[in-house]
Image (tube, rainbow, N blue to C red; front, side, top):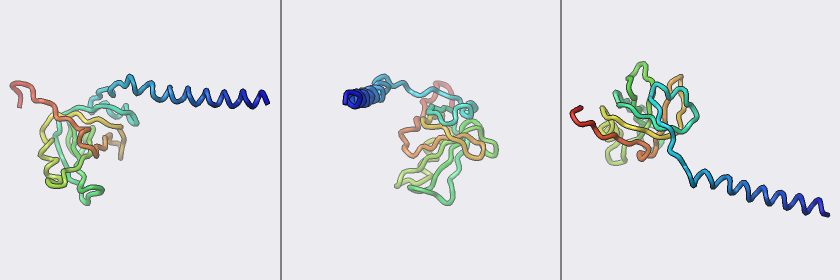
Length: 140
């Protein structure tokens, strides 16, 4: 009987310890690291912030999900991009709205880095994952 009580107490303590271990990192959550587009290939499966200039955009056909996907290429255009992210236009503006929002701009996109056919990307269904960076004074 004593060994069963000990076992039950140990299981309860493990549950409490696990609960604290899961909430503790959230209290001191640090932002993901910043990664250059060309370095994203070294961080597949990791959360990161990838910043670069949108140099090319392609609207997918046919679109999947909530409208047509738009592929935005950072730093290097097709046919040999180093990194891209996928976003969608607004329901009212469609994919052209998304292209107008980011084309030619310096952006940072946050998310989990994945790979497809050897190219690294972040899927950004939530546009809050994408931040347009302010232009530096004197540059266009």
